[in-house]
Image 1 (cartoon, rainbow, N blue to C red):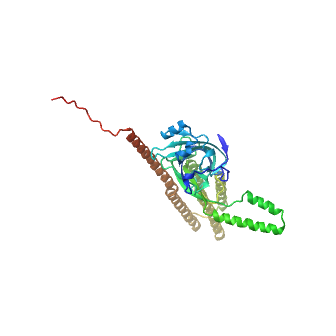
Image 2: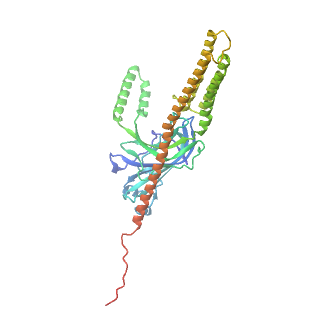
Image 3: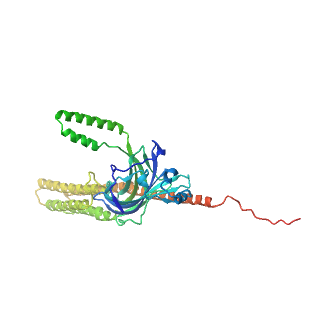
Length: 440
């Protein structure tokens, strides 16, 4: 495989076909995720190997010059013809990968084939790519999150020349069997496509740099004149390219995190640490030092455990669902510590005896505080469980429903294709039985 750096500013030769004129060429794109490697949550990237198939219509006269007589005959008969040096002397959409990180290994092949549906000749660009791709990971619902793994295909030509669209005849897909992180993630079957446009950005060219170098050698008056001329040129270019956009097609597959590990080693342990704090109420309230010592130990343990869990996540500006749960439990421990200090202070200033009996007013007040605290604790957990079913788990159910719909669409497409094939192979004549007629 050859290694290339796909950037929008790459200098490539563009030979547009004369038949398109000023109208944009519609390029149908289909992407198959052949293999998805490790999903790096900490660095917000993932490894993948994919196959991109792009096609666009051409005239037969444009290909006749680069095809032999045998290839022309095969093309007319509806067979696929290889085009080894097509990109060197013919127009092509100049595709690139927008969200690639580092070097991208790719192999590009061109071929042509006549469509049986509209008898139009199409040129196919088959591109096999392998590399690391950047993806903004949404961790609001961690660890019950569903991540989008996308590859964005763009064209170096503007939207008035090339318009990228998903292939309506063949669906994009993903190979679920060749998934490396199956122990940590569950890959969905359906694939989504999205069309968007990127506005042209302003940048300086080599001529501007030469003008700047010449201006530095002149006096201050000439420098001022040259700068004004440079600004005027930039403003003119901005007006000319204000509406120029590039077409981008994003193909996305979805992976759900297997969250059982975090439920048992995250939520469950935080829950147990917090529940132990209610056992402190079994200690008589006049042992204030013992109570505060135990709750502070639980508080430090909970904070340390939270930082241990967060080391596997990137630094983000918002809280995940596990962060919110852990912080609520930490505030619960802090509230317990404050109450133990308050009840100890009240006992100290209102009684002369170092101990209190169970029938005293302070003991009943401490029991009431225990009942209120444990009631609020269960109410908060009840609300959290309802939210868990209504938001993150409901989103996963929606993804599973889209998998079912995607499977039905694939079956319907296969059925329609098989029906058309049977109609073409079957003859249009009705068999008539031959009857021997005896002469009278």
